[in-house]
Length: 483
Image (cartoon, rainbow, N blue to C red; front, side, top):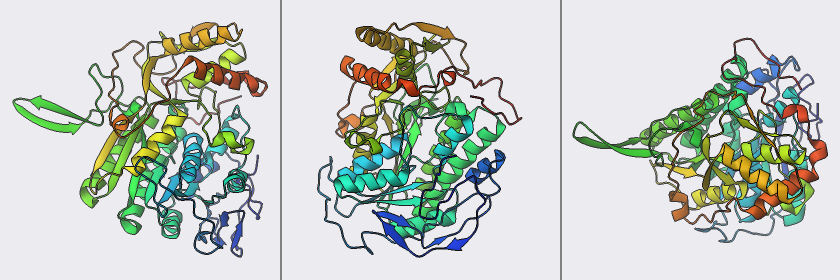
């Protein structure tokens, strides 16, 4: 297995862990801990490691860190009011899950805009690939090399805290050290199919996501009461009701009385259910503790390039195309590039909201620059357009033909339990009103995405294209998803 923690200590999750102490080290803007306390499994992440039989114990790095901005020689100040609403020079943003698909792009974008950024990540997403025999279409560098490259190109430091937010001791130390003004929380298991592989993955998803978010809420209450939580939710919380989907709340009249209530939730996987639980817990703590929070119910993200990740190959983002982590449009583009029929699940009428990853980072920036009030739980529906699966397949087919590709489509049995033909009309005006300028799915963007997948088609493992996880067939017995 590749080294997930490529620090000066040469740690590897597949080896036995031991407790020892190192001297403080700051190198190329990376902040390494004063003490590295490696403990046996106490968190969902630790139990996941143990389950696979690949490790005898799990490593939790307690980040008793030195801050480069306060302990090391000061870097030139780059914080200027470049964003909508303006990024203060002193505004500090903690990006939990900053090594992942949305998190990495967001961390770089915010750093470029003048925010002081810290990444908190357990690197477990890389472990998922190792356990399931998957890989990103794009080669991705280690988090340490990524941050070093960003510093060398821009002069901007990103602090790094490696650990599990389900470990409250670790999270507390990170909060006390970095003192965030805003927390962007991407740090959850984000795949519906992964949560439906077997009982252990379902339990891990719910424990990791719900416990982690609870820990973030308690850390804000204990250490940074004015901190604004920007939490990544999902449009999947709503399901596919036969009425319009509002942004978080709906006003109803029943038996002559009217009230505004949270919009009903109809989650369709254990992953989506974990997001519903998160939303309820956040709403409660806003009411009980006065926490300020914005829940970004995001649609399906596509694309891979942002202005920042394009600056150097070591800044490249991951691009998932497999049946577990790959999203619909990204998967279709890879399938077209390698000559595999586009895999439409069932009738293909499943309609969802979609957005370019460049709009993901823009939406997060807008939410930070326009924070919720104390005690307010805001919900924004974060997508720019809606398409059915059949419509996406038709768009990719047309774009592929312009590039000389013979793109075919095939209907495969739907591994999910979902409506395949349904009404869908979701509101998404709040972010537009705050200044979002969408990148819509144009012909030129599809051409670019297809050319990108063609460039890396030699890295495609065609065995990973077909869906391998069934909602109805999952069971309690641990399952290995074979390559």
